[in-house]
Amino acid sequence: MRVFAVAEIRMNELDPVSVELLNLANEIKADGSAEAIVLGKDVSEFANELSKYSDKVWKIENDSLENYNPEIYADVLIQLFQKEKPDVILFPNSSRGAELAPLISTRLDAPIVTDIVGLDFSNGVKAKRYIFQGKLMVDILVKDADTYVFTVRQGVFKEGKEIGGEIVDVKIEPTVSPARQFISIIEPEVGEVDIAQADIIVSVGRGIEDESNIELAEELAKALGGVVAGSRPVIDSGWLPKDRQVGISGKTVKPKLYLALGISGAFQHIMGMKDSELIIAVNKDPEAPIFGVAQYGIVGDIFEIVPALIEKLNQIKS
Ligand SMILES: Cc1cc2nc3c(=O)[nH]c(=O)nc-3n(C[C@H](O)[C@H](O)[C@H](O)COP(=O)(O)OP(=O)(O)OC[C@H]3O[C@@H](n4cnc5c(N)ncnc54)[C@H](O)[C@@H]3O)c2cc1C
Image (tube, rainbow, N blue to C red):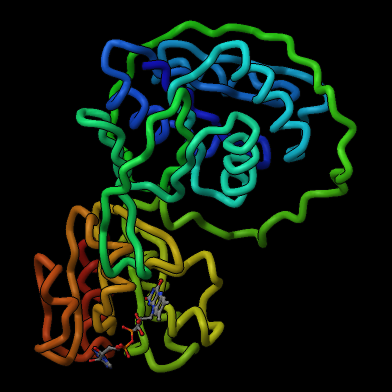
């Protein structure tokens, strides 16, 4: 099978989800190929990086591809796909992927499943995804087709291996004059972090009680070399930015350490962090469901335990 992964470049950086797409592509390609596509104005550096994880990288450089425009990008991709005839096309389940994938799917008359967390081609085509806000996971049987389109949930296919492939420079000119025009990029505030990429996450729930106490979590995160995230009530209260939310309506994270402070463990939260390598929970309620997924649990008050932890860590460091 030829599995194509459409890489994503943001703010002149390769989004790590691009490599996750290739990890999935390598998993399902059988004796076929995992092929990356990278579009932009000057993307050689990204093509080199992607070639480590793919059999082939299609590098499409053009001045008109400098800034993302869905009409131009879809047009260029369609031209490549009509020529190369992929069996499977993978996009990240990002806002960009969610815009491009349906455009490609309708143009190619290809079935699409979004936000998948697994793919199985052993007996027909089965795509795994969550439904009902993460309450159930289902296998979706996809009808037979020449090409399938999927958007892939970020953070699920982190493991893969380097294979080393070739880079093919391909010249494709856009054939559309887009109705929408790029105006400017509004950069995120300085200091923003991507919790999906963090190795250590200190996550706070409603038990943190007040915005002024977030500082305590930040101090602990600093001592551990990690970042602060939160459950939905913390984000809804405006104590942390939206992109720090863990859970089905936030981000899926898989850090080496997930420290849950004052988080009850509602399933909508658990779905976003249950695959972390090590989960430690602190909660004053011994019956809190978070203890069901934690490897280590501390029944106690975070306002006693966190300062003691910070002190201990600082002692060890000095
Ligand atoms: C459609 C939908 C989508 C949702 N998406 C998400 C999502 O993406 N992410 C998410 O997190 N939630 C999500 N939710 C909300 C979810 O259902 C829960 O309401 C939420 O996760 C609860 O957050 P919490 O654990 O911080 O708060 P609570 O459930 O109120 O738990 C607070 C916990 O803190 C403990 N505690 C209190 N004080 C202390 C203290 N001093 N020391 C130690 N422990 C203490 C309490 O014992 C309690 O267990 C969603 C809900 C819906 C309906």
